[in-house]
Amino acid sequence: MISYISGAVIEKSARFVVVDAGGIGYRVFVTDDTLQLLKAGTTVTLKTHHVVREDAEELFGFLEEEDLKLFELLLGVPGIGPKTALNILNVATPETLRRSIMSGETAYLTKISGIGRKTAEKIMVELKDKLGRGEEGETLQEEVDVLEALKSLGYSHVEAREALHAVPKEIFGTSGKVKHALKILGK
Image 1 (cartoon, rainbow, N blue to C red):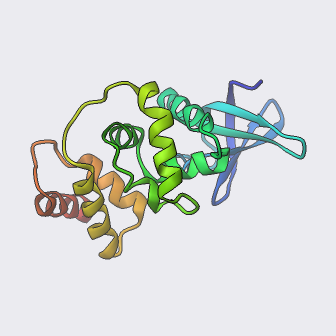
Image 2 (spheres, rainbow, N blue to C red; image 1 turned 90 degrees about the vertical axis):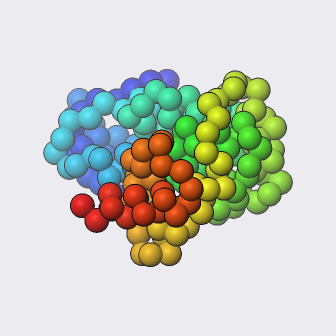
């Protein structure tokens, strides 16, 4: 089992990076956020999950331990494979996903291709006890509304999510958060 990989990023694709570790190029599937942070030629250490199947071996890499743990929890849900789990982490941050699961709101999950209401509910049931109690805060519907508003203005999902994450917790309401996020995106 490969638990981490460290080396130079020698290639980037839309879904993975190739990391040169000891003269061998390893293809490592990563989230969109990680992909944006990594630049060709830089050295990186990724915590990995190694998937071995009859027809393939794949590595899934994460910069943060929390992301890896949530990825592995998602893999424990029947019907969720590694690519779907990675897509889930592309849509929602671990903190948002945890709050979504704890509150039983499926809005984030049903936006992911291939995840309908029943699968989202299955994820909620399977992971609710494993995640423990998360912090309560703004409603997830409000977050969804802010993301949708920013995306309708032409920003990518990743840009919108990063801007929303940077909005101070003291700002309340969808319109207030959208305004502040636009200021952040305008810089």
